[in-house]
Image (cartoon, rainbow over all chains, first blue to last red):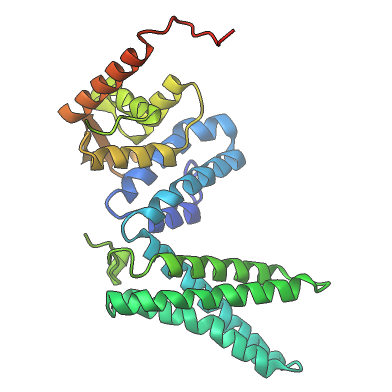
Length: 195
Length: 109
């Protein structure tokens, strides 16, 4: 249940997950204090929530660029695109429209790259392997472009295609730039950063 | 000579100096907005505070939070000697640069 003078809980939780662990509570505390004491009384609930989201977005680049932050975002995006791929496979197998086998193969590739990415992030197979693995970032980007161009011509372009394409593109770009370059700053237990 | 401070870095450092013992993220944001005369995003302030701390110009410490913050701690900032030197240097440079120019500056006629 949301407290009466607090920002949206989901936004606060998401922000805490993205921020570096050493100051996540201090930053969200500052924002919560500002929200309750200045923004909410002045702007009202809806506009205050928009203000909070804007502040959260302004903090995102800082979180991503700090040590371990990019891997954390990559992990979240990979989990999302893997879930999307799993959902697409389940729907194809359930509906079994013509040519579903090919689409299941494409959906499986949507799931396999993020699955491999998650394993690489969590298991740290070595900087050299991670550097080579970065090239896998081209796969989700290619799939996203193919799906986007293919569906853009269709009369019923579906919103979820756009969302999956954006997630895949972000995943691919992060994969290309982060692994092998950024120092290992991620540990499974409690999503803590190691320094 | 160390890297010269940018205008926003100076605004944040001066905000910390003015606020004294009450300089934490939220108050620094307000003070920077007041001195610059424009809205400033929280992201810009925290990024600058991080950078200043990494450059050894400010120091921070965490203290317990209040109920309004849901019990979350406050991180207070203090300008250290290197930060004061950097501010003085920035001011000196600016004064030197303007020394031969009549204020307000006029374009070539």
